[in-house]
Amino acid sequence: MDLYEAINSRASTREFTGEPVPAQVVARLLASAVKAPTAGNLQPWRFFVVSDRRVKRGLRQAAFGQAFLEEAPVVIVVCADLDVCADGYGSRGEQLYSIQDTAAAVENILLSAVAEGFAACWVGAFDEEAAREALDLAQGVRPLAMVPVGKAARPGVKRPREPFEKFTEYI
Image (cartoon, rainbow, N blue to C red; front, side, top):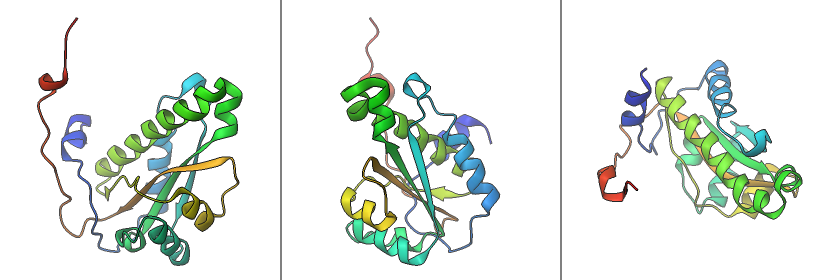
């Protein structure tokens, strides 16, 4: 699929058929994720691929009851290793670059899912501590995004976007 077609086709999908996501597709999504830019090439991201129903239930609870997290065949939880970020860039690395780096990885996952014929949704509304407990994460690993992936039961919601000119100044 052409990159621009993937960008224009991407939508937040919150209803999945339950059809499994093949391991090789998940591997390609993650391979795309690690090609994202990262401050100082530190690559602080940590990915947790969750298909276990019990763990997905914990993620659902952490995400304030968003049921589609439990219903999706797989949920990729994107985390940042804060120690790696701090070692490279101090507090700026820990507080900013960790978020930027993982956000870039998440976008690559979303676009790659579309290119693979799957659907996904970027979930940022969750209690980090509850997610940490559901995944049994080490203290220095911060969960920053959950990405449920699967075949769409129906088309995702495409919200209107303003034209880029509205937000752009040429200097």
